[in-house]
Figure 1 (cartoon, helix red, strand yellow):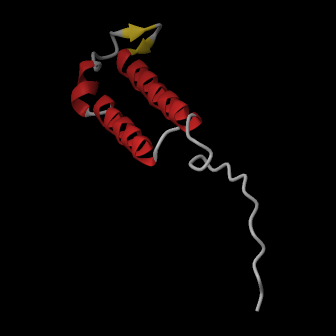
Figure 2 (cartoon, helix red, strand yellow):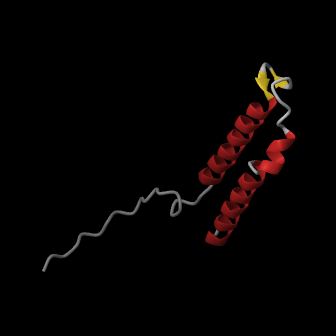
Figure 3 (cartoon, rainbow, N blue to C red):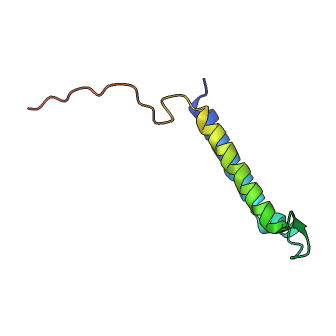
Length: 84
């Protein structure tokens, strides 16, 4: 079972990966103008959507593997409160 520190480290790593993938220096590599296309889509647009989808996929995989206490599945019943 994953610990809270492991989840936090993976979240930070995913955030940093997103920063690197969408930094202007990396995006400039794929900015070749309208002449460079992938299946008719400009290379920069294809890169942005593929990188975006990759980050979302990793986020989904990371959330899917969370233990129940971290992913919002609260199976415990709430205790009744006593009124005074």
